[in-house]
Amino acid sequence: MKSLKILNLKVKKFCEQFNLEFFGEDRKIEYLSKINNRTENHENTLSFALNKEFYEDFLLSGFKILVLDDDLYSQIEKNEKITYIIASSPKKTYFELNNFIVKNNKFEGISGKIDKTSFIDPTSFVDNNVQIGSNVHIGKNCSIYKNTIIESGTHIGDNCVIGTAGFDVYQKDEHKQDISESVGGVKIESNVRIKNFTNIDRGSGGRFTTIKEGVAIGSFVHIAHDVVIEIMSTIIDSCTISGHVKIGRNVLLGINTTILQSISIGDYASTGIGTVVTTDLKSNKFMIGNPGRVIR
Image (cartoon, rainbow, N blue to C red; front, side, top):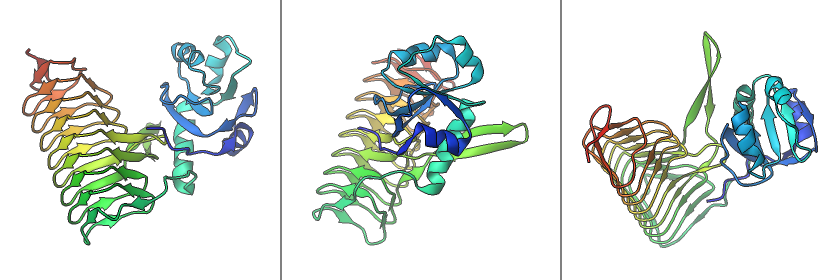
């Protein structure tokens, strides 16, 4: 799904706000990419580069606005089509910008709409800017937060929380860390089944944590920010899925599986009880153990 527009300002104003210098055209910024990561496909995306390798990838992307430090700026071949923003620490700038958006609520959310054929238990809370399709069931004591989309035929059990803020951590110095809450949404496609006491964090940078059609999720599952679970996969009880994990179609995660951040799980793969997934798992493979190992 297309990301939310979480910014609406020009480069010059952005640089004035954060005391930065820029070279090139004063472009409009609407989207926010992750650090050293091309997570959007729009020229009005603000990107952040930490090394020359990412810069070379950036040039192929069609993006136009880049935050980088003085050292990297001095090393690269300049492109007249790119707007360069110079920051002493691009990572720090990313966190400061994200916190600015959270604090000032500086982004447009989705429009709220609840289909009259859906059932929401009276004990549950549904925020503004939530879309709920036809024949959705939401059980007791649930909380559904803003910028969540729940499509038709989905069933959510009791005591579930959808759309809470995930977070990233930035170490300011050796004695202090800063937390940056995620700014995005959750999209749950049609005919998804979620049992009880499950939590799904919203995406970051305007992106959506996405649960695709026909997925089944058990009880006491935690799904962190920016996770994507493809169609017809099954997540058994008490699984923990860290941020930016990609799970393919028809995957089966055994009870109490833990998946580390940014791991990819291929189509039709599976894990055994209590598996800790620390490396990518290819399609049609079975992993078990702590740390997980592929046995077939």
